[in-house]
Length: 398
Image (cartoon, rainbow, N blue to C red; front, side, top):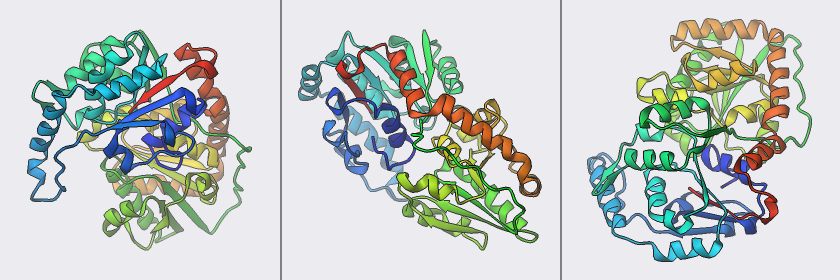
């Protein structure tokens, strides 16, 4: 849970930050803890376990051995009892357990540890369909069996979108008794300020977030469209991401029209984004990432809404991001990966920016009514059915 991270860790922080630290216990692996350390006030509320015993550095030579490595690590942990970990959980005496898997390890560990919180209300919380990409098997088990078991045994689900709930329900042949769609909430500490729509000679677009494969091909379409439009317009795209991600991708996306803006701390990101004229979110067109695109609403969208700038989503017609923008009528969608068509659609937007002001106003209203800290936290409290909140202890396992 890290307020300055992106995606998964940031969403967890924003959703659960209303809980008093003493009433929270977080469980994760020591490897995950070192890779992405939590931020205050929850940094001291973590207990960890060692999961990886063989850890090959991934390169062209070792890549073919990774699956074998995973089988060994999972096989070793299959034999372990995790007695100390289970004792710590029992001592904490949780009332509510939220299991938020971001990989096979968490699903495996939930199955290992669940006797320690038997009788508790358990809520699975999925943010994307990573299972489709990593159908891991090991001696004595596999990911899909354990995910199905978790969803079948605990039928009050938390999901990033109804689309994702439908995907998992269909695949695992299990339906929830209750479902709460829960997106990344935003702290509204000031009234978002609408932009001026006076005619401009230059336009700046911005993209904030990671450059993972499930976003990348659509981002390339936007980059190409930006460069096409520079023949007639003074336009640029600024990308705010981790330096490691920029270095990873810059050979293909860096150009006269696409620039690196740095890695901006979360507390400053909304002010930085409000300096742009429009904000870009992308979803992969690849069939390989079909369920991810269809099921996951990206964290950045609610942050974009707070920045009060036009949101432009590039992704296929079935993208959850596009569904979200259409539902709240708060953004423009480019639903093609044909660069020439995308260029034409982007030019139409540039030439008619004042016409899109209502999208921004709608986004601000949707944010206030549905995605502020107060609204989302209250919705979650009501759903988890624990009162008073201050006297309830919650275990978040991720």
